[in-house]
Length: 151
Image 1 (spheres, one colour):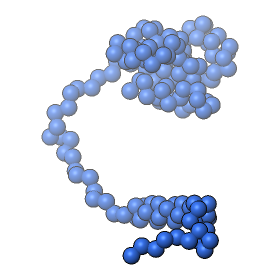
Image 2 (cartoon, rainbow, N blue to C red):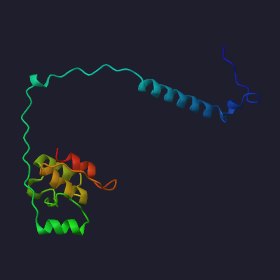
Image 3 (cartoon, rainbow, N blue to C red):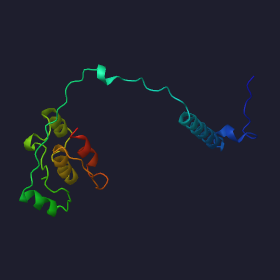
């Protein structure tokens, strides 16, 4: 049968006990144990893919020719942006010279992006020129999108 709790002898009977903390600790401990199990759990390997047998659509990317103009150099000096090699003028607007395919340009505009950030301005021109880039900039400056958009 069930036992009734006696408020005088059982401090949890009124709901104001440390047992709630104990339960929370026990649950946290169980979560941690499960995480450890999962870390050491073996998984089945992925199925091998024979890419030679798959007819992929051709992928061709038309790279932009880099431009090195006095206004691009002045922009880098004004904004303290270092780019080496320096022959890549920044992209100052998303509609500039068909920077993005039309569908991506619409999505970027719909997401509320009016113009590239400083790091995006310089990175986009380098990436769209077919070059690799090593970027250092503050968190929140737009580096991730600068890497992703040219893909």
